[in-house]
Length: 374
Picture 1 (cartoon, rainbow, N blue to C red):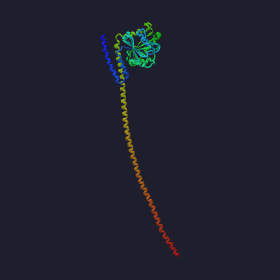
Picture 2 (picture 1 turned 180 degrees about the vertical axis):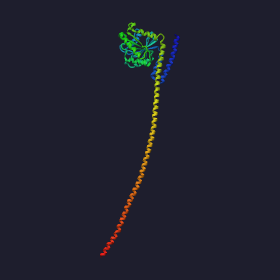
Picture 3 (picture 1 turned 135 degrees about the vertical axis):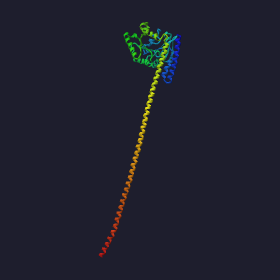
Picture 4 (picture 1 turned 45 degrees about the vertical axis):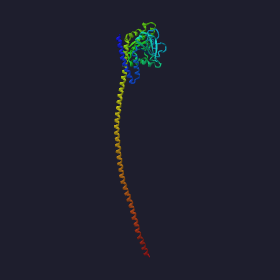
């Protein structure tokens, strides 16, 4: 026995170092939620095997715990209205004591033998309207070793309960057993139908050989232990958890949770790697597109320059030609005008000269005529 204890202690120390390394990793990658989860896991690695009782408000969780502990009194309060407004961790103690850890967690110490090997955690209802209840319940799940999912026997099909089950099983792969509480409120036939319904749904969600129990805390309290359904529950605990198995099972669960967290980190890193590769490929595509567009733009600019230069050449040549033609026409017009003016001038000169020459003979003739008549 001493050898087993020493082996367990050595294994616990190794696992504690691994959890410490994992915690440092979560801090390095700046994942606050996982860092808190791993820190809580490490802080509880020396705690007893932990049952976490979950279920909706008024499903009978508190009554189930009181009956399981066989104390003949209420350890957790039972009332018509929701009473559990904090997480209550029930552990072994030589004397009764309540220690308030924080506004959402308190520890109850009581001298009950079964608590020497296991701790029981009573949680707020998963469908409660009281602020913080569900979030603190969810934050407690990763450190659990066994989830006891309590349903109201009359209606184990509420969607909010099964949504929370998916969180427990899908995200954390925790070991789960199912309890249909308050079985005394329905017929045996209807109870069998509901137990089969839970079995079918649990198998559909990937639970291999689901463990389902039907209990009545009222019958247990009244002394009807044969019909209460708690004998099979206690037998399951004895066969699978207590009797010296709990410490090793807790370490195995801690390793499983660490592996789950490590897988989550790896999946996150793989996703980031894929995103990085996709981003790099996208950047390459953009660069290639820009390079091609730059080449195309440069070719277009070169072509535009060539077109402009060619247009400029054509324009200058046309203007030069027009200028040459214009100058030639101007010379022609100037010569034509000059010749016209020169011709007119010559004609006037010639005309005037003729008139002066012809007048003299006429006057001479007139004089001659005058003189003849005389």
